[in-house]
Amino acid sequence: MYASLSQLAGTDDRRYRMVKVAIDNKTVEVPEGTTILNAARLLDIPIPTLCHHPKLTPFGGCRLCIVEINGMARPVTSCTTPVSEGMEVTTTSQYLEGLRRTILELILSDHPNDCMVCEKSGDCTLQDLAYSYGIRETRFEGQRRIYTERDGNPFIERELEKCIMCGRCVKVCDEVQGVGAIDFGYKGFNTKVCTPFEKDLSCEFCGQCVAVCPTGALTGKLWKQKGRQKDIKEIDTICPYCGCGCNITLHIRRNEVIRITSREDTINEGWLCVKGRFGYSFINS
Ligand code: SF4
Ligand code: SF4
Ligand code: SF4
Ligand code: FES
Image (cartoon, rainbow, N blue to C red; front, side, top):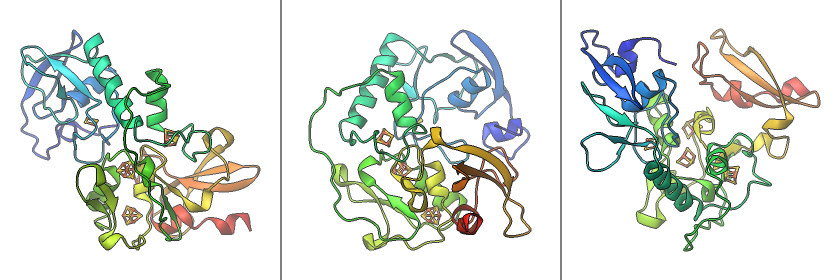
């Protein structure tokens, strides 16, 4: 996932100092500035995450990645906390798992029970986590977000009831695509990911936001009800449109290309343009 130690430390400066840290009693030496989450991943220690994405700046929004540090009173988010020399970290305990479960229950208390018809089912991080933690029901009742108006743009289905406010779409649009077409709007319970003046999305339609969304809040309109992840066969190939030669993955169901994605470990790092991601109908014609 990380090409170099400096990338792991989040710096281009190669004069970084190495620090030793113990995570779940396993020791690793990493550059100063490395987050606890990245150090744990080097050790193959799994920590659940929702808002973290390796190509985006950490946000610390979902709190699922909390860990305990010896000597600190409260858990900290491992995706935003850098390691320091001699740090001793615990990533799992009854206490931490209880907190994570409560966080998930709170998220699900304002989330539609839609998995049966959701485009993302079978490829949804939230669904996977609910499964892992065995959450069938949530203890928390309360107000739920209901949005009656749908975005009329031609490519991206935005079902904001399923949005968990992870901020990945906002960050990818800003940090990777450099467009800034969306951002968080309003406050408190009314907070949502908005376009300016809540107009229909009008942007480059690169679909990077769809690619990084961990839930079914953002999906492609072109592949609505065409087939979910378990139904498809994936074939890796090269985008035919231009000389960049981006790597793409065709999602095929019954001899029809129903969706295109791109893998993160490719030359284009999973990012595509509107043509590569959405311009595939000619293949089926
Ligand atoms: S976004 Fe995920 S958890 Fe929510 S309804 Fe869709 S599949 Fe289920
Ligand atoms: S499709 Fe691309 S440009 Fe449009 S909102 Fe998503 S990331 Fe931004
Ligand atoms: S739309 Fe998806 S990526 Fe954007 S904040 Fe909501 S859940 Fe996260
Ligand atoms: S993954 Fe660390 S706070 Fe969300």
